[in-house]
Length: 159
Image (cartoon, rainbow, N blue to C red; front, side):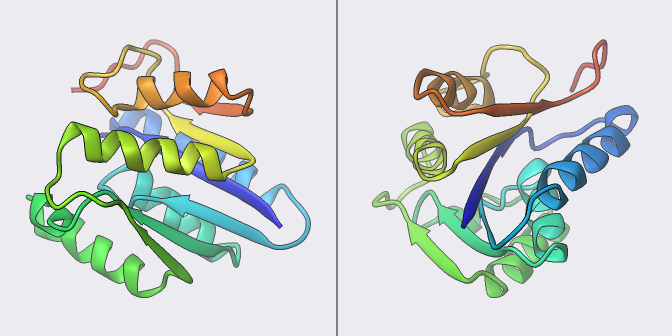
């Protein structure tokens, strides 16, 4: 079974969204045999990846950073997306953190990187804004020797 994980920004600018969707479809649809997709289901890249993975028939493994993770969703649509995708998951892994902290996000991100054969990063190439951010998880995966596919459009910055 092929295992693909995701790390990425919660905010994807409109001018890069189509490019990211095409890239995710190419990665998730460009393989043979069973697929397991790993995502924390955060708003943005994580949920987009999970939706497309499910379209391609992947088994979704949800990696939940903390016991209060649901409480961190400020946008009602993002929370609804999280709940919808979580219900469709084949497996759920919960990190041993009661509260959502940078440490919990780092643990979830490194779990995904450790568990996958390839990491997809919806990433602008800039350093992480906090511990456990996309740039840090990309560096961690690369240090493990994992292939990392970066999806972004040069010259586009996020908020």
